[in-house]
Length: 275
Image (tube, rainbow, N blue to C red; front, side, top):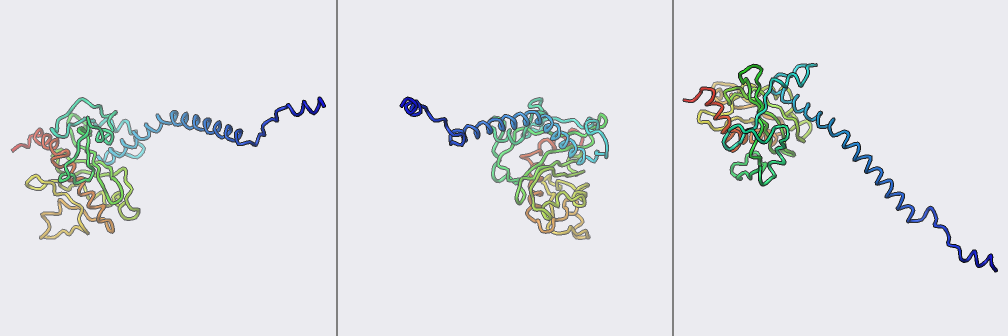
């Protein structure tokens, strides 16, 4: 009787395969994995940030035709000075600092961004930051090129790039896109060196100061009738008309009166070109 009573009063141990144990194991494993992932992210972030910085520097050097195989990127980048510009006035400002500036975050902030009037929003980006960086290629005391960050909508994505200009503020010396998701084999021709090379020597503005640069529909014909316009036009992208139009519109916006236009005007006058 005592043995029966004792066995009846004992509480059965929970099965290791019970739902409670399974949940505890799953939660513990999830927590450990989360901690490991977070730790790796923290450890790798400085490396990722440095890689992103070097990639940006390399693209800027490429658009300025300064990149050399095997050369030290930091050493070459010492020839480029970064300044912040207030876009509406075209003047240099000391704050914010270029290294801490994120154009997308600034554009979406009520304090540092503004809405673009629809009639001016050629790039279809809706908002832009009040400030923007400019990169001055200065291998000596004199500025030799100006590099502007430009971006806008293509067919499928926002295209981000850099436009390099001669010191007259109107002659293109280079164009590179470093981030986009345009159609492989079609829109991604904007990365094609043969197409990119066409931009050098093109002019941004017509005689009246209006942006005239454009990606043509088809091949630009050089003949007596079109000779006056070829300096403003680049061959179209076969099968990617909308991507080409996006390139035209984003450049026209950023060099226009709501983009870097006031800055380019001030720079042009400072170079002694005022009539």
